[in-house]
Length: 580
Image (cartoon, rainbow, N blue to C red):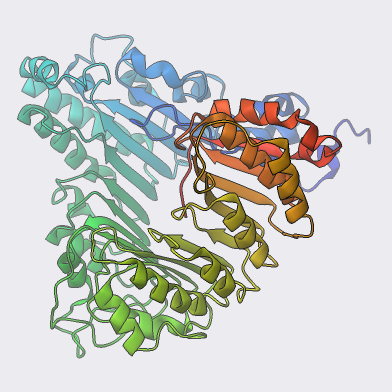
């Protein structure tokens, strides 16, 4: 048999893996902070579709996997160059490969006559065939971004709307969704929150979202709600208790949400709650009908809670561990549980721990001996910080906390310190040397000068990744670049230093000028020869593009003649920087 393509002699799963590897791209820069990221179009797969049927099938499953549908005005078509629309996917015959739909919905669209507007993009959804392979849909409700900045214009537009037309279009939209994507298992519903919206527009948004209950079927396993306030009607269809993942963002954790979480407690594996009061979170663990008064989540592995209020002492605390299978615990803000039973009972199975500490919690952890070495047997990731809502900390508190945290982190591979400033860097460095297993270090909340940073990075023998903040030397005036003598002294002083760090992230550069920042950053990379990539946050205090140009200028200085290793170091600007 003649072999025209290597794909004809490879197993199908190998061909699909190759296509998946080729189509992968790092996240694109943010288009606008008003919208979530739409799925990008993997154009690199286009040549594969022309080789043979095997390559075409593998490439199509990746190329048409995620599509973008805009229900609204043409100004949302700003995404068309980078994204694959549902219309194009249908025209190219890729409808059977679609698995995820990203839906951007302009609320003014429901005030139009769908029967006579031939160019209305809603007709794409109304007329397309059933797509049983679609498993995931993201709904994002917005008001036209040209009108968002002027609430009076929004009010005038929607004061002229027809209530009957809107209700008719909402019903048509919900029914067409139910017919087109009958097998959904993952749904995310989000809306662009604008303070001071007119009440009639708020009512339209609430009606539209509540109508989506028709597509919430018993197959649903993943539900994410962002800025959604009207939930009673929306959640009325979710009575089967089959949800494995629940994500609630910017919600107040109402009684209906608490009831929904408890209803699915037997199968729930992932629970994320953002901006909820600690007392509301506490209701999740209370069960008066239980013999111990505790509601148990036997399969919950990942718990993420961000509380926005002060924790109050309460007698209604769990008497047994409510999360016996917990692997990841992320509690930011105020720790929502007045009792430490979640931590004390989780010592044997928690591997990822991220909490904000306050004085009362720290005292309780000391009494339970939870900050001692070996307290958490399987801990691999530790991220500890001081709660942002408390201003009662002193430098002495941080110095007392640091050695305890480092003892706790002795076996961890990842350590992050948030909202902590090292007042005695030398002492912190000497205590950090105990962490031989450490591979990732995040100390970007505590800016260090070049001497302190070199000592930190060289203290950990197996460190691979580090996120830091670099500041200028103390007692230095002026914005000029360092002299040749300064560069030579640094190169000789640290000529014997060895570091294993390969990837360096810079959250901020605290210098009086971009030229001075570029000079010291290049000097740092020249001294630590193991570094191969440097990421600079676009949110840095300095203009990052100018810093990169100044790094190129500094490279031409005679102090770096013959240092060819610097030519292989990659300097990048991270548009979506996030500290761990």
